[in-house]
Length: 458
Image 1 (cartoon, rainbow, N blue to C red):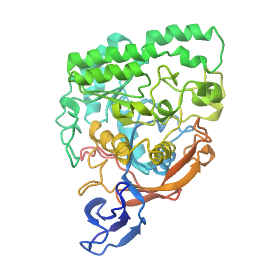
Image 2 (image 1 turned 90 degrees about the vertical axis):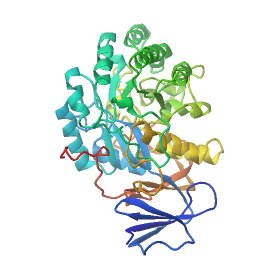
Image 3 (image 1 turned 135 degrees about the vertical axis):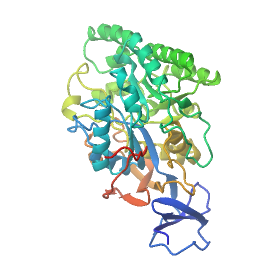
Image 4 (image 1 turned 45 degrees about the horizontal axis):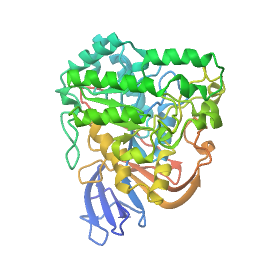
């Protein structure tokens, strides 16, 4: 007996409609809608010919839980995720305490297990390098290194220590995707994710810009492209030396991307991510929106920035959803925290590009579903296929809207995308066969840790 059938789905922009049979949270059958189902389902959801995508995966979120929950928490962040069509998120480690010890990692697993409405994984921080091996047992999505906060000696030692962990029990040992993977997942070592900005360049230019005042547009000059380029070059050198898989978060400059592509072509297992704000906005938005557009790395000018034309060369989109309070954002530019909420806006922005003929359905699936599942070895996610989790987002390609932060599920009621007109909206989100969002309304659900391990109780 099927638990659910989602019928009259279009999996692409063709007219062919299919029915998805779901049982125990898994997709067990995909039939043309005119065909008879294997059994009568308990429930039928007729999406009436709307586009259905695999549930989106955001490999880069900051849900601020624990310690910074005035900004966001796992409940509000996951509600925002469901509203935006995301069914899986990977949370970053810079909380209070940081997720850089086995105890802190385990505690955050418990918090997510209790509060998250969508499925989740966790990136681990890097502090005491003797903790690396024990943290790895909990299966972090990656070890995240903020290069702007560490010196070269620490960076080298972190690469050595992470590269020395053998991954019999790590999440990269199996590839739970229907078509196999183009990525050599993990190389039998944990993945390293990188915030690539060189600390010496940042310190030098920040000191110079502070002398010139506190106009928000100075922030783009305080962390110049050279900071990212130097850090990218340094990380690629270490990756080559140790044959270590690395992932670059929020790539923001043409030169950095060129270095990454060259490294790929030389055989390194290196991947890249772009954020919605680096994709659609330039540094002029710092003048327009002030600190609401402040982020690290900063928005770039047209000479250096990436845009839609570069998407085919980029592996994934990660929102870097980084909420703060408006009170914090109203401080002067040198004291206001960097970060932009983005998890509720990216899909409408991309669907608008789809409607304008600038992006394909396949492109959206590659950037926000399939490739994140492969890079971060997320089992049973990212694809609509038999045996995969029934994570789905139903899209109304005709529904028009205007970005209004007042309506966000996130605690962060601000966005430099405010006022952007969109065409195409997520109207239903299902996590393992359960409706978590319908027409903007959020329903209760219990998300689970995606790198399940019977040895870990939470």
